[in-house]
Length: 212
Image (cartoon, rainbow, N blue to C red):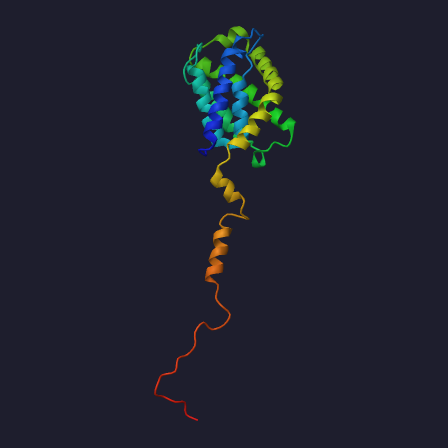
């Protein structure tokens, strides 16, 4: 992951975590809670790729595990968002530009379903049975509905910010050339090009005249 992408990713993750804890976590909605942090991770992963999405997802999930009022095992949500970021990064469009809104919504929908199921599975392994009392089917449907409603407002904006403010200046200057290494190769050919004519003349030895 490029160093230039860390500040914008950190700012978006912190903003999403604040909104998740202070706004969406306080809404008394039936079923699951709208997961804006998941949408931010998916949006950045579709710009940064699988490695960047994995790192952003792990960092954001770990912060969510540590932020109050967290009542689950530390590392549980970090594992879920890490895997979701990696999977969404594998579906990154060319040059990080999503051409179709429907394809982005499909990625968000798949991430919402997979993250809810994976979170419940990891919770069952560590002894958390809250999903059984609420109902896993209701959690999946409500999570899918809430995330799809928020996705058109969050994901395109996150991808735009990730492309605009996460560009590496060194990599951007390399992209302006016609191809990797072509500028150096052209300079080498210019300086090493063999001249068409002879580059030196024969010297006559003094004292010796050419015989007729």
